[in-house]
Amino acid sequence: MKQWYEKEGRDEDVVLSTKACLVRNIKGYNFPSKMDDKDAESLLSKVDSVIDRNQFSGGRATDIINTGDTAELMKAQISGRDGSLLFSPDKKSIYYTEDYGLSIAVGNSEHLTIKAQAPGHDIGVYRLAEKAAVELEKKLDIAYSDKYGFLTSSVKLTGTGMKILYTVAIPAIAKTEGGIAALRQRVGQYEWTIYPFAEQGELNESGVYIIASVSTLGVSEDDILERGEMLIEDVIKAERACREQFATKKKTQMKDFYGRAYGLLRYAALMSRREALDSVCWLRLYRDYDDSAEFDCKWKMLNTITQEVCWEQQRRGEINTQAAQKRRADRIRKILKGDD
Figure 1 (cartoon, rainbow, N blue to C red):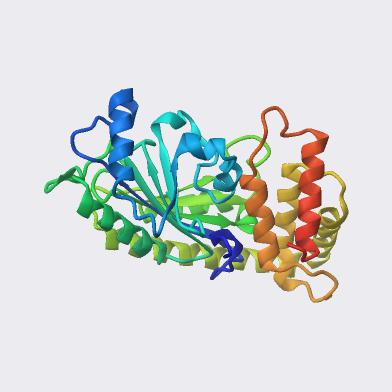
Figure 2: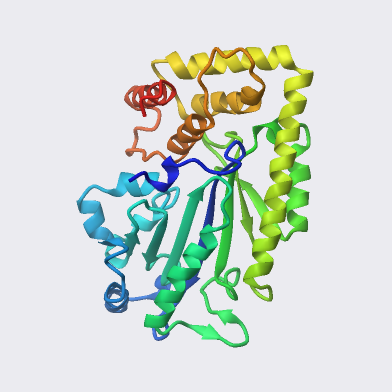
């Protein structure tokens, strides 16, 4: 079976993935940051006893680490960008479906974090996460207030306990003077937020951004979903318009950048993360306007490269070594050759 990130998605030229996160806490336990070893063990055992093993694999984070599955969890975007879900593994559990599209994390920042994700623009992930949350709510005594909604350690999540995140590739907006500032203002009008995939380091100018919901208290799930859908449609339209501006007004320059970027990705023997993502940015900008038929450059290929470079697991002290750059270059060439 293909993993969720290996499938094609709607509007995938701009939207890399859609995620829905629902958090829940169980009555009678402190929040994870204040939980002692005895209560942590009790929480993990209680949740494990109600997990549907016909749907979910996984279990204690310590066992997952010992079996060497951490790289796959990182690639599937389950363990977090920095692998944070695997810190203090003796107090955490992770459950996931066969395609990794639905997961349940236990003992992270909240007792339960239910995450559903899909490639491209697909708000249907919310219903998938909601269904899993409802099943758990039937079996566990969830902390809920008629006045405030679901109770959480973070006031930002109190209420619906819900967060929607779109990961978007918007190099044209990012390269347009004032583009990100204007988009940030637009996003704020919907009471959402936008931030770069990485604030610093090799990935900080990748053209990849996260657009996420903010309000949960005093608003309904349907309100959040409706605002998010209107917002992401605006973003898709704006990015495509900016790409057209680049392609039509700077055609010769864009064609040159496009060919150079493809050549680097296709033939380089060594590749840093920054070089890879910079090149992918230029391919995204001009891909739909290239009429030469010289390059086999499908959206799925570009998205796979972006996904793997952004989420690749790095061994300690190995990020910029020649060995790491060679592995990355080999993998990118394989993807562009269609051997993936």
